[in-house]
Length: 332
Image (tube, rainbow, N blue to C red; front, side):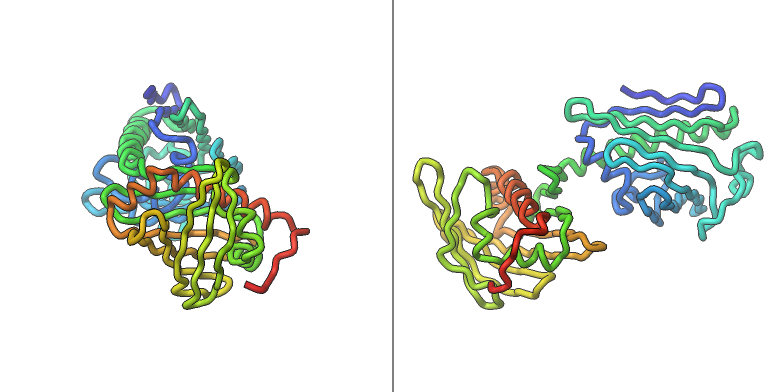
């Protein structure tokens, strides 16, 4: 479904994107992603600032093929993650100060500010995005806006197709780029960084969250210090056991862990895991990267359910750290 029109003074743009709603939302709201698709065909977006929250503001720059910059800014009136954004939008100077449309050669009747409502609807794994902007003058300016949105949507569709390797599983984002030897991942925890880190390295708690719930985990060895080693043994419901081991290269509480990872039934295939814990106003952003010895190793691990197993483990970890009454050991 593609729909683009400007009946009278009300602009309406709609497009169904072949990507999950969470992926489209991130592409729509993250500055790094916006730079890849914002603006008409052949335009670039060299500067994007986005404070995505009610009362927050944004400032975008579009650069024409001739090198001329067009700035617009706005204030968010409503933000419902993955569902809806309402903002008051208008042209601006590079400092974000509102300027009339004539500053950029637009119709003098173009409003100084106009409301923009964007909705995101899930359609069986695809996403319907609808943009409504009432109050635009009829004529060349509205035609320019319609064409610009159409081009931007074309570029967004292309970006999403290229970024199809980025998926969200149980609240955890994974990036698996074709032809590369790594997997990157990210998750937010509603708990302080010190608490998340402590649970992550607490030998008494690791069996409660490490890996899928249907497997049981036993700690054979756990030395969470630089140069220390670890070995965990998991058992499946049918009684089969398999082990994992590694060496801690860096342990820097409460912000960084770097360790090797080896699945013992496949000796010699070693990966390097980096886990970072960032304080975000009392919450914790967990980001990590696993680098494999080859693309084949990476694809093989992903194919065995790495994303799903890790996401389930992080969900179980969240259940631990987001309960203040749970006491965490500091002896790791």
